[in-house]
Image (tube, rainbow, N blue to C red; front, side, top):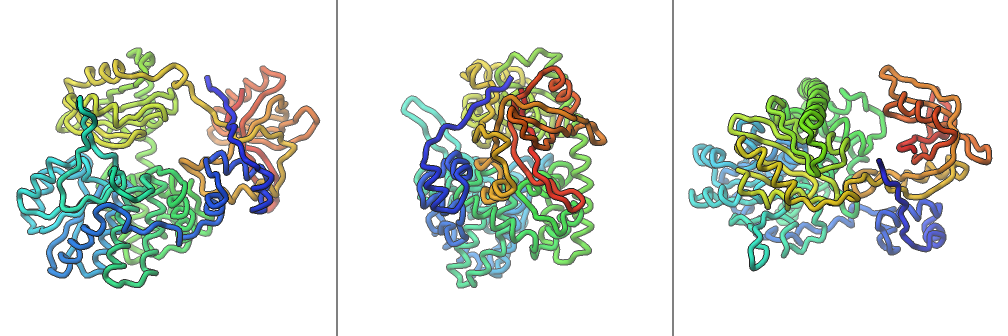
Length: 570
C-alpha cells in the first residue's frame, strides 16, 4: 500500500515564471525542492563554478595544508589510505594525482574489503611503519578510527584525516560527547565547529578541497583545480549526496566535462558501456558507470578501479574497463540471487513483522550486503540490515528510510558490535556471530517507527492533466537536471484515465505500452516499466485508473513524439 501525497508549498509561481522566463509549473517544481528566494532560484537555474565555496572555511584545512607543505618540502613519505567504493577510489585518485603534481613522495593503499575491512586498522599502520612511511593521509574514512589513530601517533606517525562520515558520539547523563580522533588535522565538515556550510559533501569533494587549498598555497595555476571536476561529480552521484547547492553545480558542470574527459579510464568506461556520443546524465553515472567502478572493490580489489582512473593510455584503460564491466555483470547476477534468498529468509522466518529487518545470509558475498539491503528496503519500505559470514565474524551493511537514523540506532547497540560507522541512511558494521539474534531484537525493541512512517509515501509535485503537457514544457524540464537524491525527477499525477490498446513488450515482458484517454477525450501515448502483466491485469479489472507520471519526448526512427512514463498506479 502506498500513500499518495501532493506537495503544498506556496510561492508566487507566476512572478517567478515571469522573472526567469520559465513556465509556472517549473517554478512550482523548484519551490517543491525547497529553493525559495530569488537568489537561490537564480543559483539553482544558472549557478556557476565560481559559486563553489572556498576550501579554507573547513576546520583544520589550514593546519592540514601547513603539515603537507612541510612534508612535501622535506620529501617525507606520505601514504594515502582510501576506501574501496566509488567515493573512496575517486578521492584516492584526486589526492594521489594532486600530491604528485606538487612533487610529493606519495603512495596509496586502498584496504581490501575482505582481508582488511573498512578504513584504518592496526595492520595498515604496522605496514606503514614497516615501509618507512612518515605521514598517513586518509580519505573517505578515519573519523571513526580514534583508537587506531592513537596507536599511529604513539608510534610516531603524522596523521591527517579527510572524511565526510558522521562524527562518532557517546550519550551520557550529561549529554552527548563527540568522539573526534586525535589526529594532527581532521578535515570533515560534519564537525560541529566547522564553518563550512555544506555538511553534505562526499569524501572525494573533501579530498578535492584539500588539493585545491594546496594548489592555492603553492602557486599552482587555478585552472588546474578543475582537472578533478568530473571525479568529484562521479563521487557525488555515486555516494548519493543531495544534488542541491554546491553539489548540484559540481555534478551539473562535471557531467558536461565527462563527455570530453581527459581521463583515459573514464573514456574507456564510457566506451564499454556504449555511451560514446551520448549525453551522459546522473542516471548513467549512478547506474551504469559508477557500478563498474564499484565492482572491483566488491568482487576483487579496488586497486583495479584506481589503476583504471590512473591509466595514461587507451590500450591499458580498455583492458581494465572490459574487466570491470564483466565484474559488474557478475555482481548483478549475484545481487539478484542474494535478493531472492533474503526475501525467502524473511518470509520463512516470519521476519516481516519486524519494523527493522535483520537478514543473515551466511554464504552471501559480504560486498553485496549493502546493495541487497537497498533492494529489500525498496520491497518492504523498512530499515534493513543484511549480514554475512566473514573470516573474522559477521559483517553487514544497512540501508534506511527517512524516518530512521541508522547510525544513531547502531550507537545504542555498540556493545554488541566490534565496529560500525556510517550515515543516517546507510551504515556498515561487524559483530560476533553469537550476537546476530540479540542485535535483531535490540534494534526492534528500541525502534519507535510508527505504522504511518512505514507506509511508502509517493510525493506528487503537481496534479496535472495530460492535456497541459507540451513538447515545450517537457524540454523546459531539463533546466531542473541533474536529477538524483534531493533533486528528484518531477512527478505529476492525474485521476480517471482510461488505458486502451495496451500491449506487453520486451524480451522479459516488462514493458507495457498503451494510449491514455482523459475525460475530455485527450489522448497521450504512455509506457509502464515493471511487472507489465500485473499492470495489464489491473487495468483490465478497472474502468479508469489514476497514475503518477513524468513526460518525455520519445525519439524513434528519427520521429519525435510526446509520451508519459507511468511510475505508480491505483
